[in-house]
Each structure stands twice: as C-alpha cells, then as structure tokens.
Image (cartoon, rainbow, N blue to C red):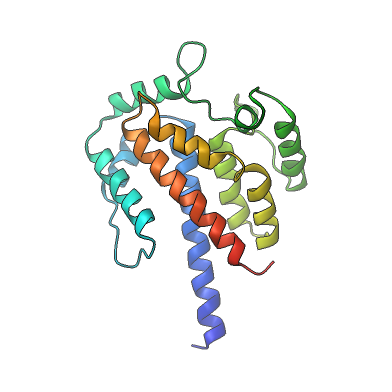
Length: 205
C-alpha cells in the first residue's frame, strides 16, 4: 500500500471517530440515555491506540460512570440538569452562553449557516438549533457528508458555533451539583472539543 493511500485511510478512520464521538455527545445531550446506550458505554475499552492520555482517561471515567448508574437515575439526573422547574441547573444553548439570553443573534447566524448546508430543524423538534445536542449532531453530519464537506468548512462551523462556548458548557456540566454520570460526560466533552480544535488547526485548509 502506498503512503498516500495509507494516509487517506488513516484520515478517514480519524474522521469517523470524530463523527461518532460528536454523535454520542449529541445523543447524551438530547435525552436521558436508554438501557442500550448505557450497556454500550459499559463496554468501552480504551486501548493503547488511544494516544491522548486525557481523552483516554475521560473515556474510562465515562465507562465507570455508566457501570454505576441506572436508567431511572439518569432520567432524574437529566431532568434536574437540563429541564428543571423553569430551567435546569445547566443551560445547553449557545445564545445563552454568548449573550446571556435565549434566541439571540448567535442563533440567527447559526440558522443562516445551517441553511447553506440544506439543514433545518425537524418539525417535531422543539429545541432551538443552538442546543449543544443539535450542534454536535450537525458536526457529525458535516464530517460524514457524502458531498465531502471540506476541512475548511468544518473548521469554520466549529470556530463560529462550537469553540466559543461549548468547552465552557462542558466544564460547567462537570461542576453542576446534580451531575454524577453527566460529570463524566462533561469531562469527555471538554477534552474532545479541545482535541478537535487542535485537529482542525493542523489540517490543510
């Protein structure tokens, strides 16, 4: 196998890992985990191939957290963190972090960018598009796009809509009083966002 082919295969594998991680974070932010997802997280096996020690430690922490919880406990924890009475302990919206208010200019800018990609909120979805879950899902779609979304476009979306606030959100999630399992999710999210920032910086644009 030539070096160029090997390099292309490696990049594709890395991108699939990125897409899968964004999708997992999006799913965990969207709703309380199902038993199937908890079981999957309990099977996490961090191998020596995981080069980033902090990221590997985060995956291991999530594995342990999943092994110590139940569907019922996670349902209660999710609602306390993100829904609550009036609002949850943590507010998972970009506009809130960037302006202190909901439905502000960052959301309008995001909607313009999503329209460029032909993406729009599903009719049954009530949450605004700047929810952490929706943004993680969008990144996974951009990475896996059959149209071949360039690294430059991925980086632009990341720089404009994720990097300015999501790391702080995941940091706050780790420190939330009602967070137990989701503290581990926050640790994984914080490490992954920083790792992906570094990854996108190194790619040719």
